[in-house]
Length: 605
Image (cartoon, rainbow, N blue to C red; front, side, top):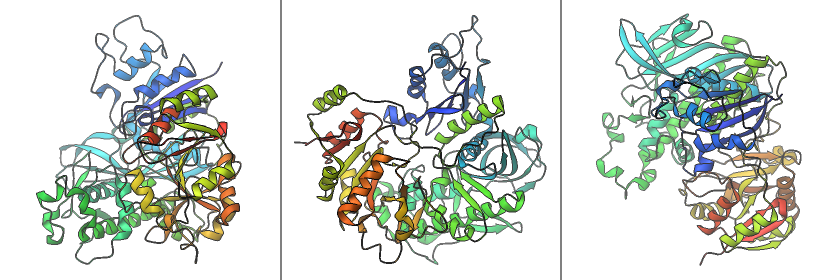
C-alpha cells in the first residue's frame, strides 16, 4: 500500500507538497491557484490533493507559529482550519467526538522553520552530507527569557546546521533577534527544550536587525513592499559607493557583526525601517511616500546608493556565514536557503571566493517559505522510513499540477477569449518571435519557485537593443528590472563566466558575460554587465531546448530572452485559462501550446 504524505506551509508563499512513497506528486504555491501574489492559507492547494488520493497517512504543517495559534477555528468542533479542512475533505480519519484538535495524523513542525528550509535544500542537493546555511527574515517565534530575567519573543534570523542521511539535521549555531531593548549576548550550549529539538548549540541573541531585515528595511526605503526584495536587488547596480552612507554593519563584541543600530530599526516579525532622520543624507519626508511620488523614489541618488550598499554589504555577511559554516563543521558541501537564497547576485558573488577553496555550493531554487512545505514533507518521509537513498542533484522543478489539456479544452478556452488557433512548428514560432513579438510558452507542469524555466515563460529576441524597455512596459514592471536568458548548456561557458560551475539549470546566479557578448544580447544584459541565466539540456526540457536551438540555427545566438509568464504584481500562470486571460489583458498576442503544436493569437481591440 502506498504511503501518502502532504505538507503545507501556512504563511506568505503558502502552498502544498504531496508525496507518494517519497516522490513528489506536486508542489504548488497557493498564489498559482488563488491568483493573489504571496498568498497564505493553502486551502485551494490542499483541495487539489483529492485529485490524486482520497486519504493521507500524515498531514505535516509548517509555519513560524504553532498550529494551535492559527487565527481561525472551525465552528462547533474547534479544530484549527487546516485540520478541519483535511477532515472535511476526508483526507484524514473522521473522529467520533468533538475534541479533535490533537489529531494523530496531523504533525505540527512550525517550531523548526529554519530546519524545514535546510531539509528542502539538503535533500534536493544531491549531497550525502552537508552544512546548511539559512538566512531568513523571521523564522520560528520563540518565547524566551533573556538575562537578567527579561521576557522576550525571539525570532530565527540565521542558522547553521549539519545534515546527513537519513534524517540527521542538527543545529550548530543560531542567531536570534527580537524587539528588545536588551543587550546582545552569546549563549553557548543552548538547552534543546528552549530553542530546538535536537540537542545543544551555540546561540547569539540581540535586538538588532538580521541580514534579511536590513535588506527589507532598504526595500521599504526604496518604496517597495518588504517582501519585494528582488526589486531592490535589480535597482542596486544603478547605485554606487557613497561615503555619505554609513556602514550598514558594524563590529560588536569582538568578531560579532551587527546591523548598525543607528540606521536600522527592526519591527519583528514584519520588516524593518531605515532610521532615515538620524542621517541627513537619508532623510525622508511624508511626501516621499504619497501615491504620486512613491514610484519616483528609485530615481533618487540616496535610494539607489543605499540599494547598492545593502547588496554589497549583505552578501559579504552571508559569505562570512558560509565560510564559518565550513570551519565549524568541516564539511565542504554547503547548501543555502531561506529568503536570502533567492538573491542571485549574491549567489554568484560567493562563487568568486568558493571556487578556489574546493567548496561545493548548492542554492535551493525554492528558498522562499514555499520550500518549507517540501522540507516538511521530506523530513516526515525520512523520519518514517529512514531511507538512505540519496536524491539526485537538482530534482526537476517542474512540480506544478500534473494536468494535461485535450484539444477540445484548448479550443473551448481559445473561443472564450476570442483567440485564433493554428497548427504550427517551432521554426515558424521562432520567426514570429524574431519579428519583435513576445511569445508565451505554455507546456507541461508549471515550475516551482519564482523562476520561469521554459514551461510558463515569455520569450523574446535578446538581440533587440530596445527589448528590455519593451517587455518591461508590456509586463507593467519597473523600468530598471532586468531579465534572464535561457541558453543551450553546451554554449554556456563560451558566453558567460561560470566561475567553476558546469551548469545553472535553476537560474540562481546572475553571471558576468564573457568579453564581446554584451553587445550581442543587449536586452538581457543588466547595467552591471550580468545576466541571470538558465542552462538547458534536451534531457531537462526537450521542447524548450529545441526552441532555443532553432533560434540558434536562425541567428547564431544560442540564448533567448526568458521572463516569467505573468504581468507585474501577478503570480506565474498555472492553468491554460490563466494563460489566455493574461494575453487578453495585455499586449502579448502569441501563445505557443507546445503539446498540441498550436499557436494561439489574441488581439485586443
